[in-house]
Length: 468
Image (cartoon, rainbow, N blue to C red; front, side):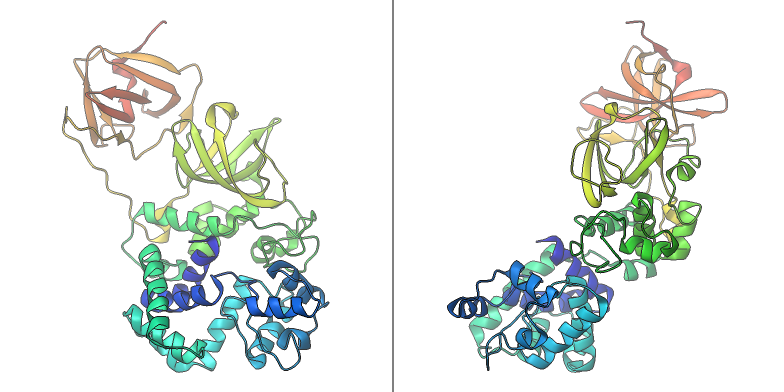
């Protein structure tokens, strides 16, 4: 499914629809528009073309936004004719008028998905209360799908074949998105894991990919309308409007945490508010080790000057989502958009820092640490759940175990669980990362032993650095 589909699902569940209800609504939207917010009814485009007016979904939408197509023409594209538009293919002129007026009042494109969803929810609550009640209470996908088909969309054909098709769409959507809990409901939970909390931030950031900064204060909520290079964004508007027009990479990070967990929790997680200046957050961490859910603070030209959210870590590669960047390779500050980026950690400055918020502040519980019995002969990878907080390039190298047996632990110190045990003479690799417990350096190492790849901590007391 598309990013728009994920957005629609999140919005509907966040605003009270059950998962079955959201699926039933979306299955009908899929049948009507393909979940494409700027979709013009195909027959409308055909009839307009026959009358000498050639449009695509994109050019038609742009013409409505600019006023080339008037309000009256939007409501009735041809004299006496009604055609559908947008996610729900609104057709009746009175309903299209409501959508048109809302978009104009907000200064957004008629094809703006967020505003269409707002209008949809308003319609359900005010004009289709029976359908709304069904969608917010039912746990049956077919019931939800049929309610939307027969009482909300109401096409001329609501026969068995149409019902089955829309149910099939709804079931497919349900199977893909079930279990994706929206931020509002997520915050109401009391028993979720730190990993799930991190994923919620990633979900919010992912939905923003493709957003472009604006030339003015117009169309701030639209992803692409009024694109420019003046640093105007919805992120500044929501986080710190006094700074509107300033570079916004850090503001984007603040916005993602506020959107996910609410303002009060975001303030606690980021240790100050708002996070709008990279050196400030950099001063609050000593970690040079990337981990999923961390905020990366890039160091270049002698200063901390750009930031983003780490969403994946795989070997030496990290994947981020960043605001005010571009899709070009390398660190691009003030690039004007929200993008997904990839970096080889070895190419970044060793001064690059990673601030890891305390996700337990959102009510999450730390993910359980699984202890592994010594010499357990398994083929899966065993990774630490605690990460190094210091970096020294001179420490990097190959080490040999000097003790008869050495524990690999989940964190630095004997209080952490054992991932595995390696014998004397085993070679381990360190890339410069370590944590200090008392006077002892615990090295963050990698090793393959008995077909198992371990990434964890070993006491430096029992490791000797090889000369070669």
